[in-house]
Length: 410
Length: 192
Image (cartoon, rainbow over all chains, first blue to last red; front, side, top):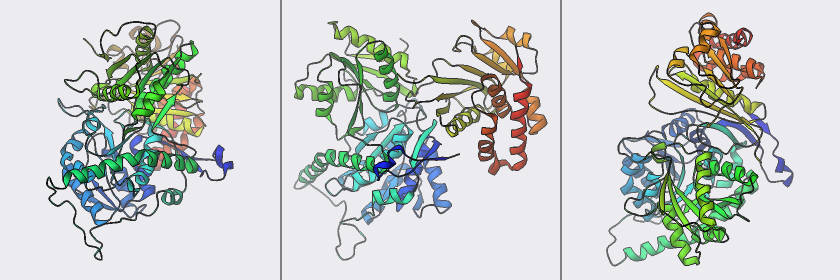
């Protein structure tokens, strides 16, 4: 089933024709990979990511792409092969979830420290144990300090769009950092929904461009070494250079988001402000919950409540200043985390925003709501419940607990 | 304000095709210019265990990503589920429950905890599946029955999706059988 739609913005001249497809998040990400046609893909199955690379392997098998597909024996090997291919000068990808990400941890940090522009979709799933295959953000939040750019996707459309943009961001010469594109396991990865795909693969390939590695192992004219011993005399300087990549990244991410808008009609920024202009109570969320929160905001707005949402798309680099500016006029804020930071009051996103708020002089009452652990459902009614708490805080109520839980039996 | 979202809850047992039905109706809705989602409720996946599928259809983009809090129609693939699951629990007032059963309407009604105005419809989809497809697989016939009851999508619009889902895997005979089964259930579904 597919319908070619004349895009409404086609009159602007540049927006490409799109095809409407019913795709799961995994299929949408695989479609993006197909259109980009990377040089090397290292693949290893893990639920809920498995179908993504399964689908991409079909594209390799039927000749839709000429990617070198490497079947590896573990995620540690998957990331190692990807690092090797990228260092050799190839555009290289892999994909994983949860414990797969945990197993490749060591090499995940090496990929970023070697400044290799690898792109990796991570289908969010709870880190075991006990064993759970469903969505939370404990996998990608856990590696937020390993030096990867992290883009969170709200739905299958964003999974597709973010995958395409990720290559341009990673490979930008002033960035040269690997990018993780995340989307929620099952909730997005296995839900079939409406996705608009750029009809012509060539337009996507032109947008992403030919990968031009600068210093690579297969360049015999300029031999280089990757990953040598880096002792106290130099490691600090090299880490400072890595910091510079992150300092340069926000402008590049925004620029790529604008340019992508020109070809697709869908522009992207570091965050999305939804009904925030006059919002008095706001939640901050990322991933699929941001979409569910939009429905809650709409219901509350219809009832006269000035509710809003800040959706974080880019979590690394962290757009703290932009988030605080968006929240500046609010009277109460909840940061919703699908992840627990054990031993710390409030989830990881909450603590980063509260830290940024101190620097920005933002003194709004702010609470942390932990939800959705291990795939626990989060619905509109529950998010409305969060807004009810915020309304009380906004009218002078006291914060009884900084950290509280949504959808938990106690 | 967002447009109305029409929600369907599919109750089946693992292996009966509840996921296929939920995504097929969503997929066909897209061809009719609608926005849609189709997804199963993931839990332990075992042949024969109670499973659920969900479909959302709307004229506007759907941003909600949770299971359905309430639904506008319920489809039950196996009447033995009626003793195990309260299928009417989150069905709207006056909404239809379409049950695959060989039993009479009155008997089915006794097994349901019907609330204000909820209506029951029955069809013997296992028999239709056996006759037309050669297997008692109720998912496509139950789509036909639901379309009769709700008038959501034209039955003709399913032919392309049936071909896409079953053509390559099972061949033309199964495709034809499913098309016949869908139309037969559309004709044979009985109102309570």
